[in-house]
Image: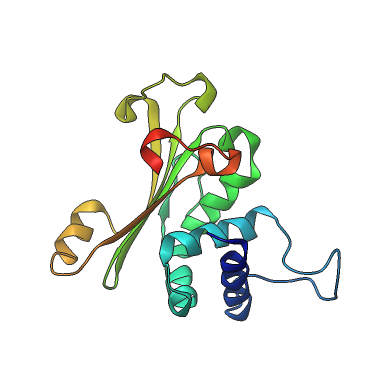
Length: 170
């Protein structure tokens, strides 16, 4: 995504009231690059590719309810913000995924049990990872979204924040 496209997405999120800029001009003004702002921006990227849907889809995905066993947070945005705010959690955060189909949506964050740098080269996700689930469970999602087109987006958190592209995440 180009810097101009990210800027336009940020402007749409500010207009929707999902991001809160500091007033003024020049250095120190604009949207702060804190964990919550980055989480909202990442969620908007996962939620939709369309600027006209940014407000509705970002708000819906951010507020999906569940319980993250790693962060203890009860909404997707709170869990992602907690992961971005903690060095320990960020060292274990691997993927953030959103699936949506019609009015049904689900999101998850996958954390490795140990820091990524210490993980086996090919982790066994059942043994080596924990996942926070938000929104519909898999059974309900696929049952209720059977007749709709399913849109899925995943961000490799570890790679994206370190500028590294892992093999399967192109």
